[in-house]
Length: 203
Image (cartoon, rainbow, N blue to C red; front, side):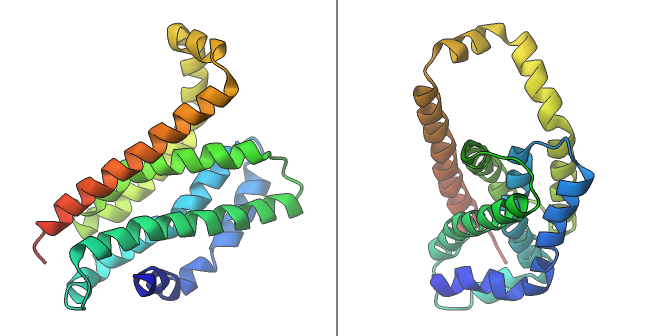
């Protein structure tokens, strides 16, 4: 399974050269962008690219001819995504630190939770959508996320008073624990859904 995880890094080594320039671009040309969003975009970069590449090159046909069960192939995707997310956030944090872009460790933690939620909904779709639509879906999703994150947050704080009052009255530690449990739970459910879809998919 380790070889399956390592495969994505080797295959994408050319595209990974765009990773740091992308972070630098966001730092200098999107000054008002939340560091949480920068970490989130960085963490989804490798994982989303891996799914898109596999779909466009139909590498799943090759993978299923190798001595790996379909459960292991899906597991490598979900475990690999966690590894790529940790590496990506660490690299993004280094770039932000060197460029003087202010952020806190909590920004990283929130981005990790958002990544789990994003992946929980996106990963099963990669096994459903046709290859021609995957890149478009990722691009549109990224643009919508980038443009709508802060306005949605403001709208939520202004209009969802019942929920915001509950959040304000709840301790910070409890909120973080609830958020962590929810995001990880969704990720695990997504994992099971992807296994169910992939087991029945015909290549």
